[in-house]
Image (cartoon, rainbow, N blue to C red; front, side):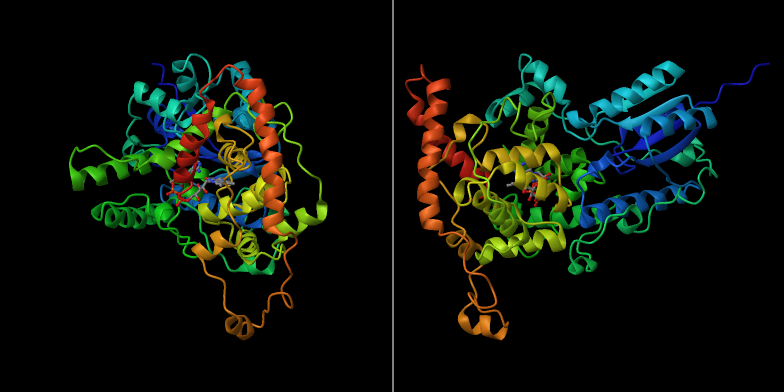
Length: 504
Ligand SMILES: Cc1cc2nc3c(=O)[nH]c(=O)nc-3n(C[C@H](O)[C@H](O)[C@H](O)COP(=O)(O)OP(=O)(O)OC[C@H]3O[C@@H](n4cnc5c(N)ncnc54)[C@H](O)[C@@H]3O)c2cc1C
């Protein structure tokens, strides 16, 4: 009598660092008897190429949380260091692997890696279980539905996904005990197979001593607690007729209500956040028409979809959606901005918070991005993207590049807002008033003595930049809108949207 064949699966974590609502793992647990959960430090996966200390530490927290969860089922998360294809090839042979499961990484920067792994699997007769769960909708489906091109503005995007319909509801964690799944404990690479205890083990050093004080902690377990806190905040807001309170009433010092780092690393499922918000709203107001309670999540989808077929989305060169603005070169100004020494307290505090803690509020991101680009320094958004990708713990290639192009008026054409600028003085004072001289004395930090004078005169710089932006707009209009007689109406309409989008 022939025995039933056993199916052995590697579940390969990259982003999507959770067990709940993970359709690829769910499917693997249904089909296969043995599951080997792994993560590969190849120097790129999960953004490790650019990541600084805080972001790497957040990733390691997420992996440690997965390891703890697998240990409760008698398994572990096994870590490897090296080239993904070579490691997977040797594991397929060593563990008699029949399946490899993973969450789709939709950004084009991961395509080459994943194509090579798919080729390898194909050549060895291994089945791939790849599922979409990092985004609410399949970006390719949105593009197909929009006639083969990514919807180029938010309204078009909303229209397209409305036609597609609601995203699927989240799945529970697989019931590994019920399914009798085995997580074999393997002795492969015993010394290095555990989750690294610190970024230092991976050669990533602290950029500032202040990073010793960890503000953000990663992992599915803690993210579920954060989600519960966030939902109770939303509930209070819904009750007084508000929504998205972290945007509408920015608190730039209390940062722990943000879920963007958890969404980026996938320790929180975007579908869970989406549906929990919807269900909460309905539990209070019934089936009435909802305001845009998940509007910000849709921006995330929009930027993913815009980037999915554009590998040059994170740069100016060869990027079809990006205007080729002639930015200045000024390494001293860039250094002052990057290290928080511009002489504008609001901008500098923000850049230092970014370096020390790894997260800054959306309103503050807008202010520092505007200052670097079209507001004051007239430097390329590419520099800003690089700095953000290093320090932000929620650094997300598509979302970050999309927002940088947006704020710098480099893309999404109707937003060439040369008239609108975030003042690094007034906006900062509105969000967080400047300390009076007595407070400066008490803190031993007198502006102009212990703290630099402004590196640029904002009023003068902005007037010059406004003219430059006008000329960019004119060149752009000549090319793109020669035949549109009613273009004059567009900027104001989009200005309102733009300000609203950024919670201003
Ligand atoms: C220059 C610049 C760079 C940015 N880089 C990133 C980045 O690398 N990663 C990132 O997740 N967000 C980025 N953002 C968007 C935004 O600042 C953060 O997502 C937001 O601060 C997270 O706070 P929250 O979780 O309270 O957001 P909420 O208002 O609660 O929104 C819920 C979720 O929606 C998504 N979201 C919110 N705002 C945006 C937006 N403008 N575009 C796309 N998605 C959004 C995030 O996943 C967020 O967690 C950037 C914004 C700017 C101006």
